[in-house]
Length: 246
Length: 269
Image 1 (spheres, rainbow over the protein chains, first blue to last red):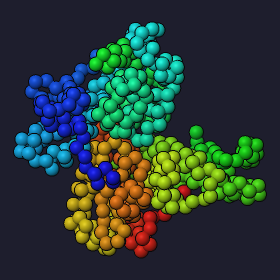
Image 2 (tube, each protein chain N blue to C red):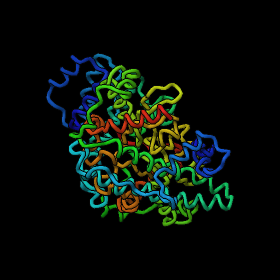
Image 3 (cartoon, rainbow over the protein chains, first blue to last red):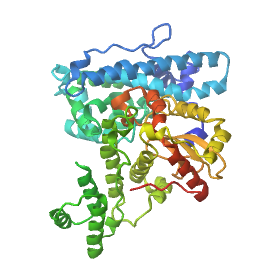
Image 4 (cartoon, one colour):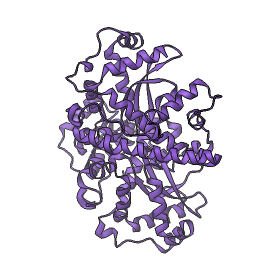
């Protein structure tokens, strides 16, 4: 495969390796932070607690799906990210460049899996909470209308892209710091949005089959349509405001 | 949607709606063959080229529950009737109105043909290939690699056990990221077996997916839909259990075919 032919050390991985280097440019430092975020002082990543019960998102997402998704899938990404980072530490300390490069896939996959799922849980909230109402004014509403015309159009566009992801991946709403506008995007597998595209993640929709197979089987569109009922728009807006200021 | 109506609508895609109304008004055909015959007859009469190009979902050679306990009946049913059927419906849509292309040739040029053909044409071939290499566990355990295949396995991997271990490692979630397939293929020269993974519905027959086109003799679906109802996140358990339903007689046939023909194994449908 072409990716195997040209092994390129991604900026994010370089940054993770040299995260304390003063030569690091600020953009790369931010990407490194994405890999290392939520790591306590010991450097070990931990599975974050959910801000709601496993059953809180029913009927859009079942308790069974939430429990598997959080306690099994996300937990495995955390475990394997820690393993990969330990190996990376060792490879860096022995200046084993070949080993550093060979860890790229595991770091991207497990680091991305951890970053994406952490963002995802915060993106969601019970249907009856105030945050699940799309705001009637403010920065998010303005940004959505500027780029998509309306809230409904934004949902349509993000839904269509998410449903269209071939295989495993994510649909996103992200902030483009270059244009100052928000955009819809997709990423394959666990490729993290920011490291892969430069967009700052505001809202992610996991369209791996594990995110919906228990509840919706092969019918991905029904899952994507239902998830809009449990989006935490407060989180999306907070991320937007922070991205614009930073 | 039932398998019958899916097959019917797939075949009729591209036909005028009044034509499909006429078709539905006739007595309902019972088998795929009857549907094809009826459709072909009418299509010839009014010259609709698209109907000739319809790919179809092949029936399984065994009941849905036959691979229990290793692959459960609900998984087999939804995998065949929904997932595979959707790939077939979509490849028929993607090739509607175009000249008929053999399924193997469709694989070869899939990347040039674009994502709809690549994903759905690949999905059709891969699943049709997959169903036929499996058998109920009682039958599967009586099958074994031919002497020629066994010699090639030993030459390429050291032993059957080493091949299985390498296959399981390649199929692990941390090696085959996301959705895809793991394959044992014969290389272009025909002198070695290669173990490869391909993303999504790509396969080694597609020009441009691997360094060279290779010919699969054994393949495993590691999309989550292939195992999630029974195994959830435990993909390695699904993979190691799967050996219990591999039909080595069929794999040996595949091997003999590709070595002789230097071509992919034809599939039904």
